[in-house]
Image (cartoon, rainbow, N blue to C red):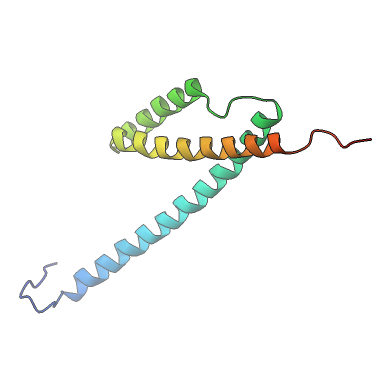
Length: 116
C-alpha cells in the first residue's frame, strides 16, 4: 500500500480502507473503555457509601499504592508504558476520592434520626 503525497489529497483507496478499519477498531475500544469505566465507578460509588456509613476515610493510600504497583506490572506485561498506566490510574483514583468525599459530605448533611 502506498500513498500519493502530491498535495492534492489523493489517497490510495486501500490505504483509506485500512485507515477506516483501524479507526473502527479504535472507536469500538473507546466505547468499551467508557463502559468499563462506568462499571468501575458504579462499584466505587458503592464503596464510597459503605465508607461513609462506617465513617471510613475517603482515601486509602495503602490500597492505592498496591493498585498502582499492580497496574504498572500489568502494563509492563501488556507492553504499555507503566508511567502512562500510573498516570491514568492516578487520574481515576483522584476522581474516586472526590466522589467518596462528596458522598461522605452528603451523609453528614442528612439527619441521623427523625424527631419524636
